[in-house]
Image (cartoon, rainbow, N blue to C red; front, side, top):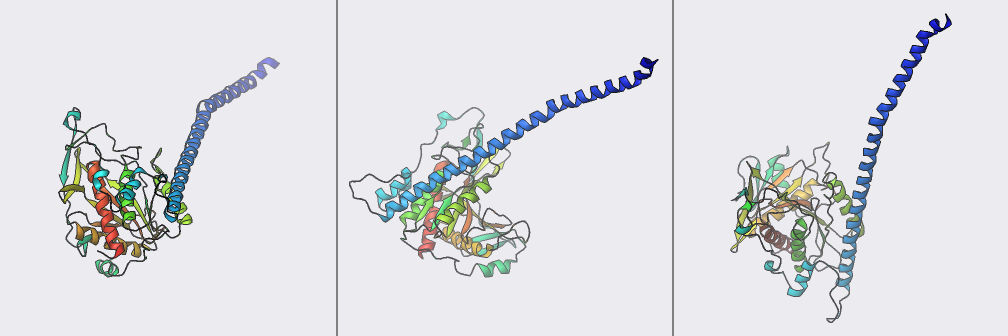
Length: 380
């Protein structure tokens, strides 16, 4: 009788035990792998942070060495200080370097793969209509609610900073949020479908273009630093956070810096055909360039100094287009952040796109820097 009465309780206990075992099994199957993935993600983020910090520290170290070398002239018999190979070209030439010394060998038709993608060259002209505000030779495409009259009035004001020529203190920082962006390596108008337009080799990505810009500005007497941190590698996510930290380190160490140029390339594609915005200057093809200037929208995009950056953008646009007609696309004035709150001379510049070959981008970098030097030295 007692056994019969205890039967339901026994079955209840057995059911509870079964449920408990199922919960334990579920925890083993789900929770532990989740913990594992979270740990892997956390370790990956930490490794990425450490890698970015190490790259930045190395770049700052090179900058310090270059500054020391500039302030203490070495005897002619001494070896050149540690720096990028491109920087030595300026010293050797004693002036603006010959662009030919930077150009690379491009792939010929014999390297064209089966199923190669098409590239189409084009030239984007200056805009017309209500959205476009003239700035002497160039134009500004206004994608904000700021009135055209307000923009036109603002860009009449002088630059918000003064550059000290031939200064021992850095005036300009060239850097790359998306440093691994790269260009096509074919001479012909085709690209390899396997090409991701990303490259960690600084001889072939945005850092190569940044070196030309840096050397050209330094040759003009504008003390310029170049940071080659791969802020978008190994993870593209968080690249603007990475580059922000990099720029802040430079500004803390070199408060004399007045201009920060974030050098990128665009990516324009239509139905699998990559567009190559180009212009011919002095018989050589150059990639077209486009400046991007952010605007404060009062909420999500906080850029209290957007007016000063806009003045700079308009002045540089006018100098480039005035010196090299057809070289620029209209300035894009839009609600973009891009860390442009860090100085009153912070701009993003797109040097061509992934349809351009690297040599067109290198030449464009020099032309853009020539115009900037003319602007800052009063020659434009």
